[in-house]
Image 1 (tube, rainbow, N blue to C red):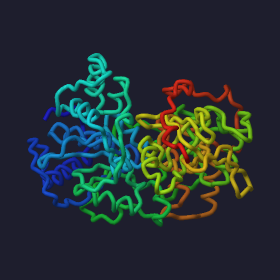
Image 2 (image 1 turned 90 degrees about the vertical axis):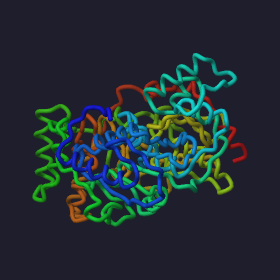
Image 3 (image 1 turned 60 degrees about the vertical axis):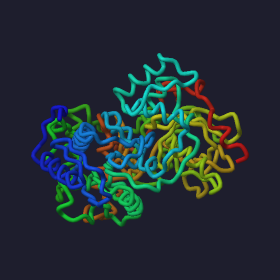
Image 4 (image 1 turned 30 degrees about the horizontal axis):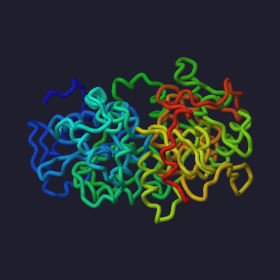
Length: 512
C-alpha cells in the first residue's frame, strides 16, 4: 500500500499491529489489501488508550487511510452507498459535533454517533449524485445543476470526502434531498470511536450492537460521565484488549501545556506546587499565561471552564452585563449550549431533522438573531458541516441565587439552550479551542474539598481535562475579575452572517 510516510513510536507501532491482527480476524487484511465478505461474526471491542499528546489521533488517521486504501468504504452518516454482500465499511464517530470537527480538520471523515444511530431517507436524485461522487455511478443529469456546478462538487469531494461539502460547492444542501429519518435497524461493520471516555454504558451497548468490530480511542485521565461513578466503558475490557500509548509523541514534546497536563500524574503534586509550575511556564513561554482576570472577548467563542455551577452562572451574568445585554433579549453573537430538544413523540421527524443538523445535547451554537416567527432563533452550530439552522427555541438565562432561570425566548416547544459564555469542565470534554481560560479559584475549591474520583484527587482530573482543551494557548485565571470588551458582540467571523441565512426550517414547525 502507498500510505503517507509516518514514523511511529514503539507503542504506536505495537498498537497498529494489534489492531491489524483484529481486522485480519474480521476479514480485512491491511498487508495485502485482501477483503473478505463480512461474516457477521462478533470480533469484539478493543481500546487504544493514552494521555494527551501520545499519538492516538495520528494512529486513528493512519488506520483510516490504511483501510481506505485497502478498499473499505467510509460510512459518514450522509451517504452509505449501495448495500452489497461483499462490501466492507468503516464509520469514524465522535460523541459531539465539536469532537467530530476536530477530526475532520485533520482529514478524517468523522461524524457524530447520533448520525449513525439514525439514518436519512434520501430521494433518488440525491442517491444518484452521491453514488457518482463516491465513484459508484455515472455522472447524473439533474435539472438546474450545470456541468460547472458538478465539476465543482467533484473537485471538492476529491480533496474532502464530504457529500454535504461537495453539494455546497455546487450550490446545494444535503438537507434539500432528505425526505425523512429512520432508526438504524441493520448492523454496520467496523467502527472507530474517538473521545471514548465520554461514552456512557447505554451508548456503548448501542455501538456494540451495531458494530461487530469496534475500536475505541480514549484518554483514561479524563473525567468519566457523571452517571458512571468514576468508571469509563473501556475499564471493563480484558487487559489484552486495551492498548496503552505511554510515550508523548515528538511533535508535542516541547508543548508546555502538555508538560503541565502530564505533571498532574505525580501523586505527590499539590495544588500549590502545580500553580507554581504554571507560573514558571508562563514566565518563559507565551503559550501559557498567568491571568489576573477573565478576558471577556474570548468568552464569545470559547467558554471559561469552571467546576462549580454557581461560578458558571456568575460569569455568564457578568459577561452579559459588560456587553450591555438587555434582560429580555439576546444580542447577536451571544454563545449558547444546546441542552436538548423538547418535542412530543408525534414530531419525531422534526426532532431528527434538528439533531441531524447538529442540535444535539451539548452542541455549542452562536445566536445570529430572531427568526421571523415568535420563539424562533437563527443559530450557527459550531463544528457542524452545515452550521446554519433556524429553530423554535427555549433559551434559559440562569440567575445567581435564583432557582428559576429567566427565559428571554420561549417557543411552546423546540430546542432548549443554556448560555455558553462559561461552562463546566465536564461539559467541555470532547471539545477544543485555540485559547482556553481556566478559572483556577474553582479548582482550588475542589482541592480544598479533598474529593477523590477513581482513585485520583478530583482537582487533578478537572485540571487535566481543562488544560488539554487548549490547542495553542492556556490562560490560568487566578482572580475573580472580568475585563471590559474591546468591541461589541458580532457574527462577522462566522461562515454565513445572519443577514444571509435562509430560514428553511421555519415551515417545519408550523403549528408548534
